Length: 116
Image (cartoon, rainbow, N blue to C red; front, side, top):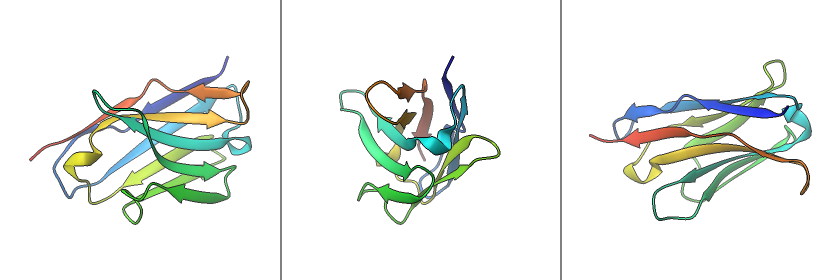
């Protein structure tokens, strides 16, 4: 059974940092395109960052230069380092692993709250 489990969310102040983790079981994350999405109430899920099979990365303009996605094959995990957090970064962050239409998996999300 495939599982993605996110962790690392929490309550921080603007300007602070968080590191989110996504640990996989049942699949080898390095064989997948790994993505972090975020969602806030009333809005569509937004793509934040992509790690293409452990090689190249891509970021939404809104987080470029502040967020870093990375992977650890030994831990079978993907991380999202989030620095200089802003109020608009708040939301539920979801981890996604995708190879094709049949092999597409989601975690349950981790809440990021930003408040002064």
